[in-house]
Amino acid sequence: MSGPGGPRAGGSWTPGKVAEVLGVSPVTLRTWASRYGVGPTLRADGRHRRYSDADVRKLQHMQRLIDRGIPAREAAAAAFSGSGETVPDVPVDRLVGELEQAAEDLEFAAIAALLDETLDAIGAAATWADVLLPILRRLGRRWAGGDVCFESEWALTTEVSLALQRYVARFATVPTERGVLIACCPDERHSLPVEVLRASLLEIGVPALYLGQLVPAETMAGLAFKLDPVLVVLWSMSAGTVDVLLRERLRRQGTEVVVAGPGWEGLDVRGAPWVNDLTAALDAATAHFKA
Image (tube, rainbow, N blue to C red; front, top):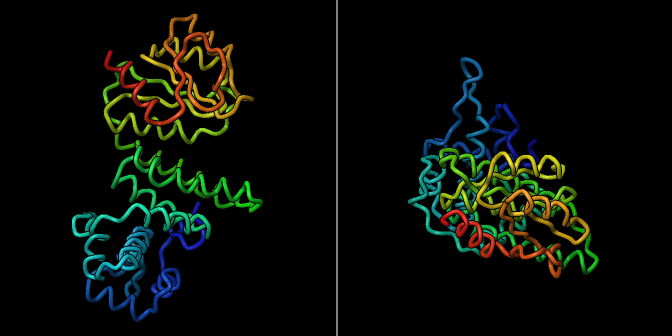
C-alpha cells in the first residue's frame, strides 16, 4: 500500500509526475539530474527514461535534507550514496515535528521514510522514547480534548509496526539459543510497545521472538513449553485484557514470566515481576538471558 504522495508499488514515473509529487518544477528536477546525477534510471523504450520507485524515495529523502538546510549537492550525495556521513545529525525535536506533520497529513510514504531514517540513526529504544512517545502522548491529549484524530494515530502506528518489521529483519543472524518470548494476552490488540521491546532486545544481541496479537492461550502455552524460553514477557494494555489464568498456567509448567503493561497494575500475580516501561522490560529480559 502506498499513501498520498508515495511511490506506487512496482511503477515507473515520468519526470512530470515526479516533479508534481515533490512539489518542484520540472526545470528544478532536470537541474538536479544534470548537476548531481540523480536522474531517472529506468528506460521505458529507446527514447524515454522513467524514475523507479527507489529513485523517487531517494529524491524525497534528498528533498527532506534540503528542507533541513543542507546544500543540494550534499543532500544528493547523502540520499543517493546510501551514506549519511555528509549529513549532520538531525535534532530530535525536528524529527518529532516532521513525523507528526506527516502523520497529520496522512503521508504514508513520508512516515515510512522518516521512521526508517530515525531507526537507522538512533535505534529502536531511543526512537520509541524520544520520538514516538511524545507524538503519541500529544495525540492522546488531543483525544481527551475532543479533537478526533484517529486517522493520524492509525497512520502512524501502522507505519511504526511495518518499520519495526523492516528494522528487525537485519538481525536475522542472532544465534537461535534460548531467548525471550514476547506475547500479548490473548485478547490484547495494542501491541506496539512490545514490538519495540523485541526490536530493542534484538539490537543489543538478545534473541527475542514476538508472537503477535490474538494468539489463543492454548497456543501460547504450547509454544512456551516447546520453545523453552528463558523468559516470557506477557503484555496487557488494559485490565480488561489481562489473563491471570494464562499467567498461572505458564508458571505451573515451569516458565519464568514477567508481566508487562498498565493492565497488570495492582493485580496479584503471585510473585511475577511487573514492568511498565521499556527500560524496566529491557533490564528484566537481559538479566534473565545473562543468568
